Image (cartoon, rainbow, N blue to C red; front, side, top):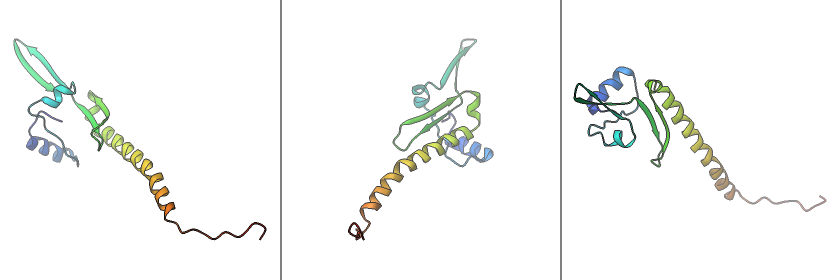
Length: 115
């Protein structure tokens, strides 16, 4: 999320080789809500800037991870977190798929005891 325009984010993403969408919050609502918008005063002039942060939000809209500060410059941390969440989701879905496939298996004839 950035204070920059979508066009500026697109140019930055292309320059940095980023393959996922960078979002823009030019009206600053989300940045204020998440505590990322920082304000400071210099000689009676107010300035605002967005703290560098990676926020990973899952498909249900739940925040799974927030990383702020200098370490958030490297998008690999967010990528690792996304991969971890994806793996957890796949692991949760796997038993359900296995149970569903077992219900569709044909019944097998069993030999009577002692044969």
